[in-house]
Image (tube, rainbow, N blue to C red; front, side, top):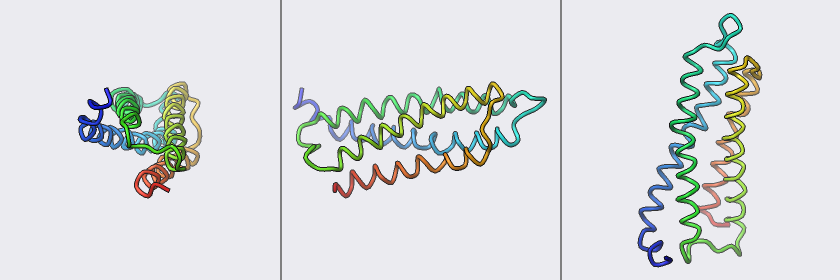
Length: 148
């Protein structure tokens, strides 16, 4: 099994990077949609159908599959011999940041449900939350590239 993972390593790593890019695009865009939805998307107390459809499709068709592929490919990389030395801080920091990013993804899913019920947070709060994936991305990239 380990020989197979080593042979497939460049392919799994490529798949992982592509999935991360797709996931991150959604994590950047969905909170921005929430800002517009919260500030301009209500009509007669009901959410605008265009926002509902865009948010739902982004989350279900792009973000969820990308997150799952990111996790599966990432775990395959972790179990490839010689790739991760758990004696350093970087894999632990990256793991914590990935868990935080996953939590944020699920928080966005709950916020989408709240928006559909007309229970939106204010646009300012969504703007602030829009910075979370950027901060986590910086931590993850520095962890993997610098390997502190």
